[in-house]
Length: 458
Image 1 (cartoon, rainbow, N blue to C red):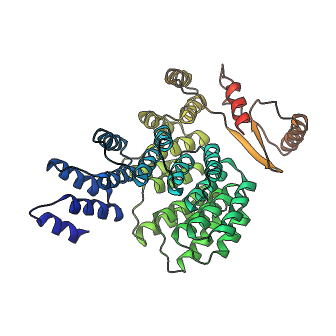
Image 2 (image 1 turned 135 degrees about the horizontal axis):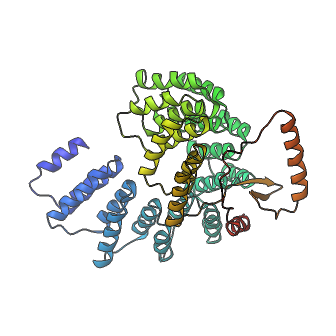
Image 3 (image 1 turned 180 degrees about the vertical axis):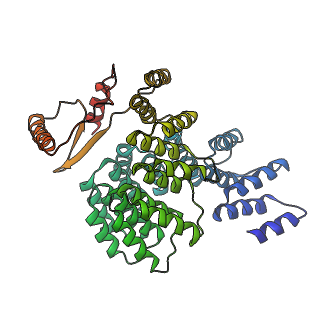
């Protein structure tokens, strides 16, 4: 592309065709910023645009996450009454979906006179990427009812939805569908591995990984991350070492998965060693996620002072995830001085996650800073945020069972409570003492109406 840019800049006269070629080239090279720059040069030169240019620009907006420019481009197309075929309309659906504006994406999609498998895949992927598992699976069924076979993109989104909702049985069915109708390549294979892992079937994930004829870096990263989320740090390291014996080179995502595995397993020394190897041997500059994993690893183990020094050594400004990891460690290990600093830094970000405010509130409660607790409650009340209650879901014989705090609607409640009481008695005999210091005065009970809604959705 650099040579093409040099020729383009030397041209005495540039027409629509050569400008369109440059925009397309930049997009194919993964350089959306330069694609937008060409468009702006064309605009300054008073050039008129056609649908091909608009489609390229919409794709650039999707890659950049620039919704404002995307809306501007869409408005230009409407005002100039430019013809929009299925490719342009699908690009608009994809752009809105990737920016999280699913209502706009659905509106464009519903107005399309003709939709192909790619169009359906764009919207299905948008629902999956934004965490709407139910909508994702409903769209796949609707797509089939319209006479279209799900393509690999739609099936990967379906697998993501299964992993989000813990639908192991349905995930297995989709795996079987892929084997019967398509080729289990690297993309679908990695998605299936991720689904099995997040649904709790790590043995299935590893068996499939071993059977894959061709494995790229993303496949290895997915399997390393799978061991990590299950707390198997030593297995993750063994797999990483196996990867280094191939022709593949670990990337920043590989080390993020590895360091996360160490964090979940409490392998502090291993984490420190491989963090140093990442920088010194592989010349990978640590990013926000690497620092967050390392701070979490150190803070979890009680080495809060070291975690604080690591943050001070960062070349970039620490993000919210880093400070939250430090604050969680201070809360768990009663490190008040550093925790005060971390709490203030967290609040400077004005987070929109109610769980983070709850963490800050719990830290202040542990420190007996009741005015801080009251302040957090006031902030949460003023913002109007409501905490979505955490719940566990298990699938038994194809039926989902949801369990929420204080909910008593399950038809096997008595048997569950009897088992829990027996477990509590066994724990008490082993010396377990519940922590009562975090019980706050006037503690507000979770919203039962929200809990009921969640159970009905499941």
